[in-house]
Length: 60
Image (tube, rainbow, N blue to C red; front, side, top):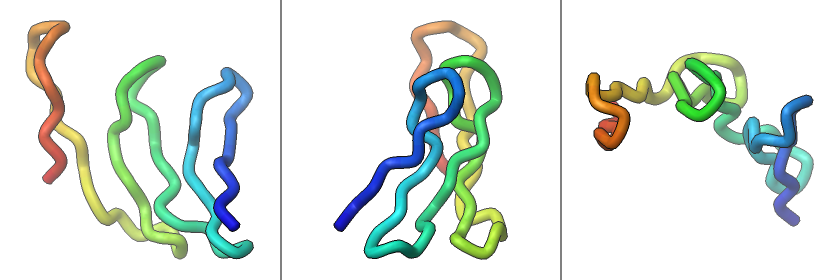
């Protein structure tokens, strides 16, 4: 079973699969994700954004 974790602003903040936390997200601001973490809290991916508002993100 997959359960989405929702923060206080009604945004997805991560997910649990069969009760195990998988890849919670750290937000940079209201819309953009800054990083994904492993279940233990270690960084797995960073998200880099362009300077224009329409620029896409590139996980690193």
